Image (cartoon, rainbow, N blue to C red; front, side, top):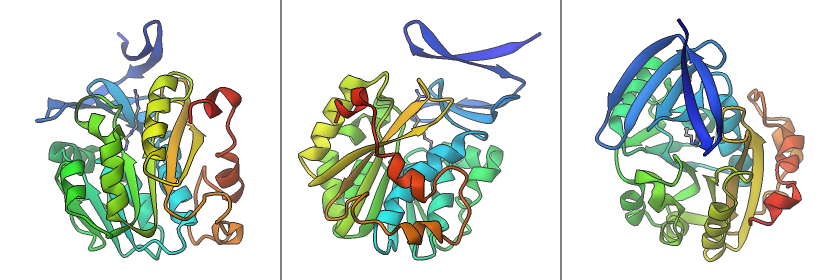
Length: 279
Ligand code: AG3
């Protein structure tokens, strides 16, 4: 007998995956957590029934969340990630040799523990053993309130804006982030699907523009997310992701990537007309 899971992306469409095994199913203080095995996408992490990351296409999301900001900043040393309990973004951050400290501010400790247990390829750096990684099991808003002039880059690796993540899409949150960033600071936040969430994007980008002088949207193709077309918001105090990059620094990077490269860094910011209208 076949077992399938479906995530609805709209009232009448969705993504279906065949499931061969359930590795974990449980509930934390904050959300429902499932990790399942699928033949097509490998292990899949779901929060409240929504696909957060898969072993097969997760590299696209994590590379694109991390590298555009870290290659636009002249020398990122202190990096904060809010959310990101699967550890995939931390792994990418640590590939940058300039990074001295990567702080993971993830509210859900059960998520971290289960990622370490069942998603070793992503979560290998969040098991508490890497001295460059600091784990703060805290609410992102509460943590940011205590931080001033502390980070070069802040990455928001959140769920959809419902439940615990809703506050991470608000203007007040972006103001706290701006205060927590140093002079050339950059914030990047996952900003949902331009195809399905135009209205939400317009609010989110207006909130960012109220706070940061430089705001741009870039996109990546992520097959398991709603519509496959996913976006990230880039917000900078001084650095612009197209005008202030050194293509040779990206081309001559000391580590391999499977999606991100010096051409794609530029290309990702070129938007179709309907998406441009959302920012
Ligand atoms: N964060 C973005 C996932 C949002 C996907 N939404 C959905 N499936 N409805 C992923 C967090 C992984 N670190």
